[in-house]
Image 1 (cartoon, helix red, strand yellow):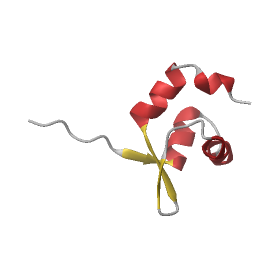
Image 2: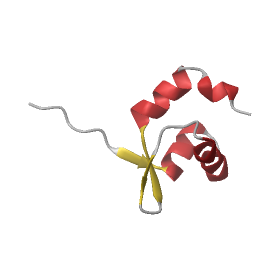
Image 3: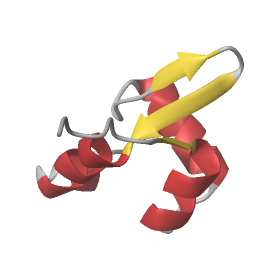
Length: 63
């Protein structure tokens, strides 16, 4: 049985998971520090990529 593809999460869901505001998420996107995909006007994220970013320690080094 093949693996199920990972579900994409929206900006609001990821902001809530990380405990930050949507504006903070948009700033991180502008700075290019968080992995995302833009589909139309919406930003989408893979939780596994966000988790890897947090675990790498890079999220703690944002100015």
